[in-house]
Amino acid sequence: MTELFVLEGEAATWKQALAITAGKLLEEGCVCGDFYDCCVERELQYPTGLTDACPIAIPHTSSDHVKKQAICALRLKEPVAFRQIDDDEAEMHAKFVLNLALVNDSEHIDIMMNLMRFIKNRNVIDEMESATLPEFEKLLKNNILNKE
Image (cartoon, rainbow, N blue to C red; front, top):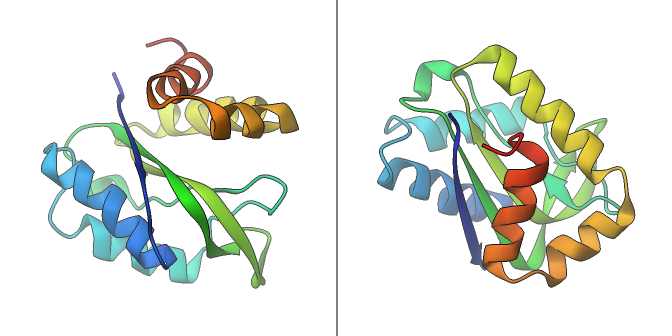
């Protein structure tokens, strides 16, 4: 079962946004001490920002740095620049950072497929922005984690 932690906060850079999410995952005992550094390394090689129309970044690293499966979702007060997944020369502005700490490869694929299905509709982003924190958590649980 994948745990879900939902936060709201502020960050000036993508590295600060990653530090917030990785810090929460570390605090909850879900990841190893090097998780943040490995996420940064991976983000530099393989950017995870989607698009400005879909302002979500999905940082992660290999399962070697994960103790128990979890996702930390951060809703930022102001977006931060991440490089785009499909064009690492282009920047996008992420309002949401979903840091994946996954050990199960098949569940990783399921979560990514569920996420892509969920965010196809622009109204979803509006819902995620306007929802209270508990509503935001419920949206993610019901649509990404297959109602775990």
